[in-house]
Length: 320
Image (cartoon, rainbow, N blue to C red; front, top):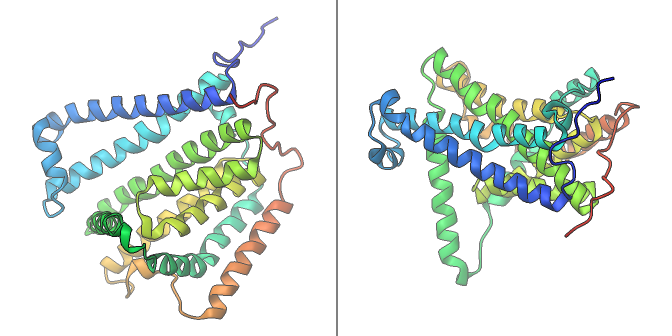
């Protein structure tokens, strides 16, 4: 009778798994970036030594294409490849390890769709509050650097959001919505949230630490708090639904809505600025948004499948 093979790294403690995961992420990203760098010459006619200089020029069309190219590579090298490998080493099945084999209930996907739009006024209010952040005088150097990073990120986003054709729109949906939704949820919820839960023994601590790392990774400090809130939201969606497809769906809605609105604005179909989509100064709408978002989460928690597993902690889940 066939006996399934034990996972290759089954005996690792949770802390060792965390270290292994970090090493795998760094290795896959470095290898993918290096291969991608070598391919810039045949693909774009750009010498390797010229790439760094071109990436800083957001006014040049070739530079934008290079940035898009590396953005896609990053999604695979930093988020998707290392997580799939870790899933294989830890459980011999990436789909089972990441809870991709559990689709969850259709009502949860419908509620998640509604919740992501309901949450917009509250999330945008948090963005406005975060932008008011002022550091003490002795941290002026850090504050200037943070503002400079934020301005560069805004310029890059603005360059990506120029979509004169349907082809550019479809590519942006893939690059900004689909790949990040899959890749970032693979890494922060599928892998890190699980490993941190096994190590620390607390799912709530794991959700908040993963959300913190998720927000910090974006290096946009004046949007740190609302992005961390989204990370917490995605974390609980994963925990309560039992399926990684649910936070992937929520992440896809969040990013995809921005791309769609930006395209419609660029085409003149709707008026306004995509960056202010869902914003309001109405206090009642903001408070109502927060309350309804909480209500949707409560219903989703009540709807979790009867067979839902909360990622049990292995016997060897002791800190080193």
